[in-house]
Image (cartoon, rainbow, N blue to C red):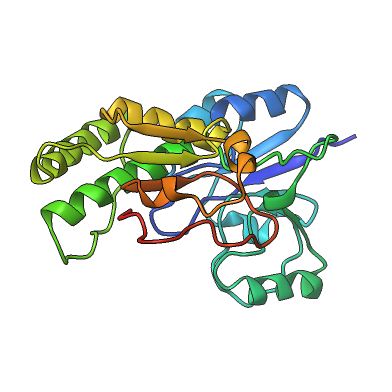
Length: 262
């Protein structure tokens, strides 16, 4: 019996360097009996050779479009806006991405299926692909840089961001920006509140703040938010609010008074 073929597509979204599969997970899949085809990519954080070294077959960028219909296409962000029907099973984040209405309409026309990672759960009902550690880590980095930018460049919009080769390079840039902001703030560092601080995303946010040199960090999780109904003055009294919780339904306003600067 032929093995199931997984086809890792190259991401086309601008600034997207992440990969739905790593070389180590690819190796584990191959050992489990899967065949893994990996599209060559000039922007993926992992080199093509790293996948080839663990047994994956390298294929041309964009070749998923003409791959056999029984191949499972694996990716992260939205597909390019094209018109052809989608015939494959796609494992990706898609339901709420840009242009998703048109893209979703291509599945029934081609007989394809979307397995949306957004709401994929395990047997206990826990989301498998929820925001992880590095979502909070990078989000907090941007928040710290934004806070500093408002002090060093008042009235100017925050500039576009670039990717970093590793987290040490990111932390170095955040520290420099933070130092510049603190100098403009009379030597005072920002107060940061992280809600959802004990989760994967929240722990990443707290770690970034700590490694950047922030000392005044309010760590809230479900115990604190359930202890009182809100609004929460702790949020508006902070300089930076990092929200690391997922709300499945609308909640009442948790803020009152002036808003945090970041």
